[in-house]
Amino acid sequence: MKVLTKESIEEFKKLKSWVQECPIEAAMEIEDLRIENKRLRNAVQRMETASNLVLETIRDEVLDK
Image (cartoon, rainbow, N blue to C red; front, side, top):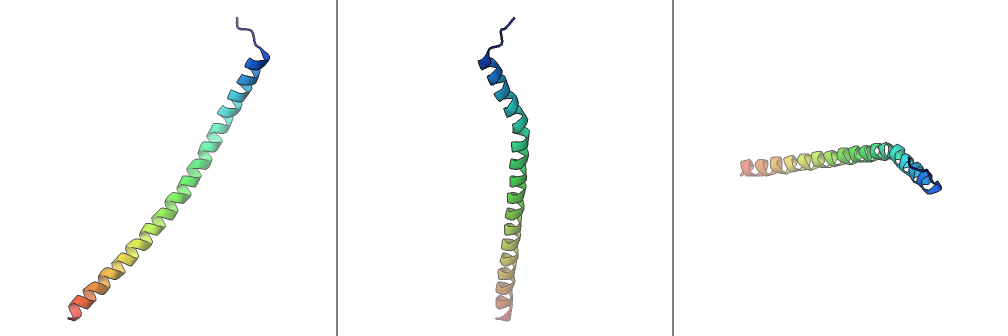
């Protein structure tokens, strides 16, 4: 039978605390990544729109000649 020492009890408490906090930290990180993903998708969409406008302008210029 293992004897519980003050150090082993403290180590257990630290481990228990870490296990409890880990899912919360992971959830916060996931939410941060979702926000960043949305921001990047919006940026890509703006770039696609700008690119399409440039292509339209080029086509119009070529057709007018």
